[in-house]
Structures are given as structure tokens and as C-alpha cells.
Length: 389
Image 1: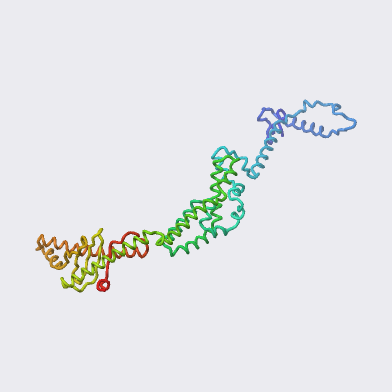
Image 2: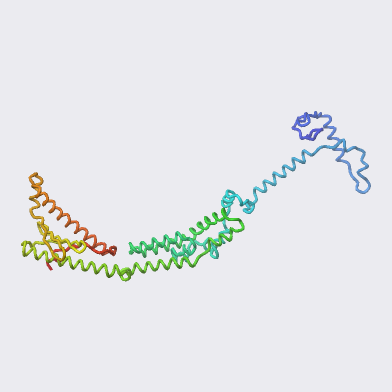
């Protein structure tokens, strides 16, 4: 039921209108209903009758329905909004001048349009297929070809280091990387492309996004060719290092051969001197160290070590480690003199230098065998068979 004065819809059994305060009596309401029924029952004759013939005043029966019309308009607006909420998200409706709004834009955007522009002709193959035959064949070079320069260059550097230092693992590493890259490149590249597109969307205007994607993406032929040429040159130089590097091939071996010949020659002279003069023959080994143009030589026998020194082309016998045990006992008993203490220190020094040169010689031999030493070798050691040969 509506208010008889203002037309506002009343609650059940509500007599006073909450808008205008009018009292709606039951009798007036019943009379109003009867008038409405009589009015609705009037039959209009389109041919003979005219609306002007009706003998009643519409002004007294006029009802204010503006309130109902407004409520209907509000309901219609709500329905329209609900329909709009269910409509598909339109990326072009989002303002792109604000960086934050652009970021929200990229959250819902699947990049399909710009992704095709970024990848190029092979977009469908890269997006849909799991295995990439070109990535499998060209390995790390294909990353550079697709402008993923950091990943490609790092992969080539790792390959190069393995070839230089662990050459036995180079071929297995290449085969394994080919398989892994072949099966994972498409997924890695699509993820990389989306990250790049996200940055482009945030930075560029809408009109330049496609053009920028084509410029940043796609492929590059020149840079991969240059980088791979450098890579192959380094591989060849390392592989043929002994033949190409004159310092390693000629100077290194020439110096070492000369030093080796000089050492073994002086050791044999010192050994012959020991046999003829010092009456010592039970030699076990010997070491030699080059000091600029001079050489230091140590001959190790069963109980003693002899110390020789080559100066200005002349070999001098210096001393040996005889009586070292006696001097050590005196040192323990505190009965050793100052002169004897100096002699004991000299004999101990001879023993330590012998061990030092022996270990250094073994280490240099190992480095030369592994082709890691390109400097002049200074320390040498010899066995009894080499000395007495």
C-alpha cells in the first residue's frame, strides 16, 4: 500500500507515512481502491468515444509515482553494473600513464600479442613445443643468437675452463648440456621474454610497445658469429699450445735441458770427488738447485749429506753432516760450546735444504707433466742409478 498523500510505499499495517506524516485511514484506502477498479473497467471505443468525454477529474486522482520511477532506475543501474563486472577484462580500458596501474596491467595480461612480436617467426614453435632442435645443436651459442647474451657467454666460459683444466670432462659436459638445453630452452626463453615485455610495458607508451619488443627480442646473427669465432680460436690455441707458444715450446725446454745437464754433470763430479778424496761411495740420491748462474748441490749418503757449491764455474766442497748426532747430544746435555752450536746449526740447515729442494723438484715435475708450468725449472733430484750410470 502507498501513502495517499505522497505515494511512498508503506509497510504492512503502517498508517502514518514516514515521509510526509499523512494519516492513511482504512476507509479512504478502500474508496481509493474502488475508484481505481472502476477506472480500469472503463472500455474505450477507438472509433466513437473520446477521452474528453469522461466526466471525472484526473487531477484529484493523480498519484505521485516519482519515487517508484527512481527506485526502478536504481535497480536497472545495479543490474547494468553487475553485467559489467562479469564482462571479459579489457586491457585497453586500463590507463597506462601511471606506472602502478601499468604493473597491474601486466599481472592480468598474458603477453600473447607482444610475445609473438618479441619472439618472431618461430613464436608458435617455441611456445608450444617441448624440444628445440636448434638449441640442441647449437648449444650455448643459441642463447646468444636469441639475445640472451649473459647466459650464453657464461656457458661458453664454463665450457672453455673445463677444456683447459679438466679436458677429459669436456666432451661429456658438451653432450649433457646439449640435451638439457634442447629440452629446457623454450620454457626458459618464454619466461625471459615475459620478463622483458613486462619491463617494456612499464617503460614505454602503448604505441611503442610492439616496436620495442621487436627491437629487444627476435634474433641476432653478427654477435654470435663474433663470439663463437673467438671461442674457437681460444680452443685451438689451447689445444695446440705447445706448438704455437714459442716460450713454452723452445725457451722453456731449452733452459730446463741445460739446467738438467749442468746439474747431473756437477753431481757426478762431486760424487767422483767424494769417492777419491773423502772415501764415500754408498750414495742414495742427490739434489741440485740453480741460483742465477750458480748451483747448490747436495749428495745424500747413508749417514751423511755433503754440501757443494758452484761459483764462477768452480765446484767447491763446503761441508757435510758428520758428527751431527754427537753435537745434538751435547746440545741436549748443555755441554756444547758456541762454536759447536754454530756448526750444529749449519749441519741442520743442510738437512733442511736438502728436503726442501727434493720436495720442490717433485712438485715442479708434476706441474710440467700436467703442462701447467711455463717458467724455468730450478730444482732437480736424481736417483742413485742416474748418478752412477
